[in-house]
Structure formats: structure tokens, C-alpha cells
Length: 122
Image (cartoon, rainbow, N blue to C red; front, side, top):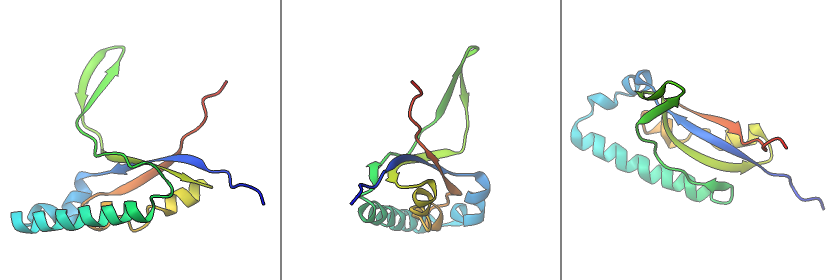
């Protein structure tokens, strides 16, 4: 029996102003917001537990961004909100792990972008 070849994939959680607006999150009362946040965190935890065998790095939420270039350091805003690294046999299989994820079914997230972590050329 041959061993399955697994690759690592970076999943980047995207949040947009349009997704926040469409979710109605800003219209929730403080109590409703806290309850939805609690439910989202619990659902995210269940997602992690059900995928623990393929999670390489659970990741974390992401904070504010500084861009560094030859021109120096500047504050910017992007749509990246969190990341996770998973292991899967294919790009499609990795992407399917995030179908129905709480990031966009409970939280006001927009999407999850999944890309293969490629080997450094030698």
C-alpha cells in the first residue's frame, strides 16, 4: 500500500467592508454581537477539532499591517483577517476543508483563500 503524498496549504481568511455590511453585524445590539461572537468562536473550535488531523498550524487572527518596501515602512489596510495551515492531498481537497466555515457563516467574513505552500527552489 502506498503512502499518500500530503502537501501544505495556507488558508488566508478575508474580511471586506462589503461582507461586514451584508452580514448585518454592525446593526446588532451589543448583547447580540457578543452572543454571535460566542457562537462563532464555539463553531470555529468545533471546526478545528473536526479537522485536527490535517491542521499543521491553527494560526491566529491577524492585526494591523505595516508594509515594508525600498521606500521604507508605511501603514496600510488590507483584507487579511486570520490564517491557518492545513495538509491535504490536493489543492481542491484543501479548499473543500473550508466549505461552510464559521468565518463566513457566523462571523461577517467574506471568504477563505487557499494556496499551496511550495518548496523553495534549489
